[in-house]
Length: 265
Ligand SMILES: Nc1nc2c(ncn2[C@@H]2O[C@H](COP(=O)(O)OP(=O)(O)OP(=O)(O)O)[C@@H](O)[C@H]2O)c(=O)[nH]1
Ligand SMILES: [Mg+2]
Image 1 (cartoon, helix red, strand yellow):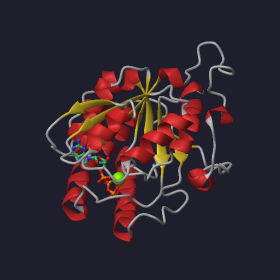
Image 2 (cartoon, helix red, strand yellow; image 1 turned 60 degrees about the horizontal axis):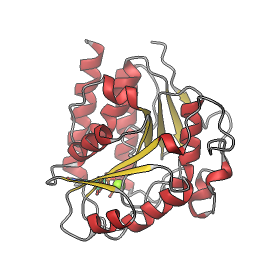
Image 3 (spheres, helix red, strand yellow; image 1 turned 180 degrees about the vertical axis):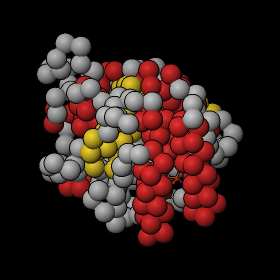
Image 4 (cartoon, helix red, strand yellow; image 1 turned 45 degrees about the vertical axis):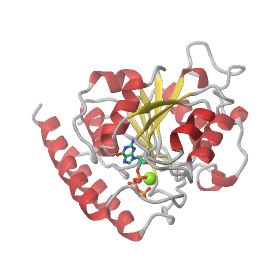
């Protein structure tokens, strides 16, 4: 199969990956602000950043502050929320659009969030302060350079903040998916990706805990151009919402099911 999968780090690791998690990169750091965007290129005004939020009081303020700072307040933010704590109030105070929904799992929330996004470029993230919003400009630049999906690869820089069991599991998931797809991918379960909205709208999404893997596998196997972008990964703020054993089993099942469905489609 000739897909457009490229690993953005292989030729030349980006210097602003692992190092920028704490640094003060601003919206001018890349080519995407209004002053420098070429005609027809997407800017932060074309960006929706979306997430599921489930009792993320400890992290949501930081995550939304980061998005605001990095995109100069231009990106739309959508939170699909199932919380019983102050998460939705904090999200609204930060200007996010909050859609309330009973907690039904990661994929139910994220699927609602990507479909609720209004803008032509959609970025997903977790609301636990693990993903580097400082790298949003790079993700947008890759879309402007022709990528349909830009997938944050946490394992490229080692993901030392990730629990060892999860890191091993994620390596195994990537290996299984790579064999079944016939294309090497490095991180199938990352929560941080950018998508052209048309990719989201042209595919029917079926998975819940395995949605993140599905969001990579189906577009790749349909010939969309996918690029993996090395990202830094920080320790989670607040409690995990995923049981590693049960969640891991569901993800493995989703990977096999989705790969086979796409192969025999
Ligand atoms: N609305 C909603 N959001 C959810 C639900 N389950 C998870 N989330 C959110 O989805 C994101 C991913 O969940 P996490 O607990 O971070 O799962 P994970 O990244 O696999 O696990 P960690 O390694 O602990 O971060 C977080 O922002 C959660 O708040 C749910 O049932 N409803
Ligand atoms: Mg997380």
